[in-house]
Image 1 (cartoon, rainbow, N blue to C red):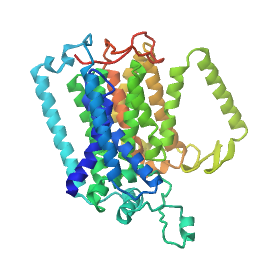
Image 2 (cartoon, rainbow, N blue to C red):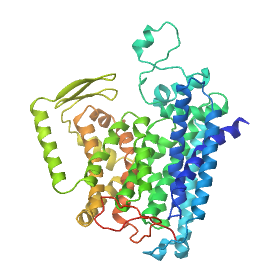
Image 3 (cartoon, one colour):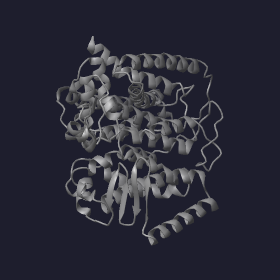
Image 4 (cartoon, rainbow, N blue to C red):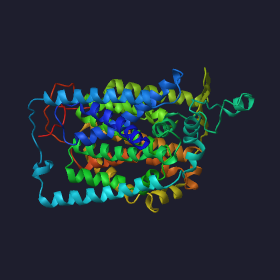
Length: 496
């Protein structure tokens, strides 16, 4: 019985999320259902974490009963809405760029190759899921950070608080717990706790199962968005296979327990939806981007910084001409003034001191970073271009950067995408060359983990460089195009 309930707890959030995502479209664009399954799983699991937080806030003991009832209702409501909208979609016109974009219009060799690649990818993912099923809890970060809290909550069946070490030392009741990362977000621990509540007891294998769902969500979401962009089924599957075969990504799937996989999936799917909104103006893609982007700080502390990386691109979307030049000049003047006075420091009520100085950045909860160029390129280049963690991805990235340059002048949305990619690379450059995080590269520890959180989005951008978007589309309902577009036409990619 526990096994059936655990399976239900793992599948119901994804099903509810997928149906609600699918309900956003009347007709089914290419890749709609894979897109809905990928994004729906992540949104569903994030909803589970919010339901468990609400349960804690209301003073109820950890339980799966109420969340399962809510999820069942959401599934029925989402299914009904999706069915009604698909039934009332009407006829949709579409100008197809390439007959090979249609599945049944492809040559037989492409269909055979597609199924061969799909079988290989399925076999690979099956092996990774077996690793999760057979292997005990292995990652160090899981032992010390991410699964300590869910294990305590599961075994005690109460929301035992985790506090800072000083408060724990001064507590005489024994009701408080502490870990070094006591202030890390609760989302990943709650996701590990969720299936164990239906299982009835703490079990490491059961707690790790949501990681397999996150891997599948990344694959489905990436493939669906590639099809939505305009890639043929074969090209979309090849791109997805290139992503899911990256050794560093597979390591984080097999060694379930790290939070980096969740951060990777949430942030990357948000970026991909943002890219789709940039060129198409489709508000539903914008909604998906916003929902996942605002969840980034709930996964890991650095998610708050990754969320800010959307700001430069959004400013370019909303501003152009003299307002943009005025903003750039103002930022430059403020930057010079900030440098001249030696930075700023002030207290944030309830959080602590915030310091922004030329040689020091201190942000509450994120940490204290001494700034100064620590240029050691050898470990970075070796990790990316010599060792086996990335296959040939970074060579492909370099080729895409060169190939992208000619298209930047032609289409504004491509320039905004490039600004976003540049903002990400600049942030990572500052992190690994101007802070003590340089030691992570020199010791070959966290450098690949941090870059992993960006790579699926980079991979999608690489695909957009070589695969042009679907040019002709008919909207179900008039949608105001994104301000990022230079043309008046916009809308959705609909299947035929």
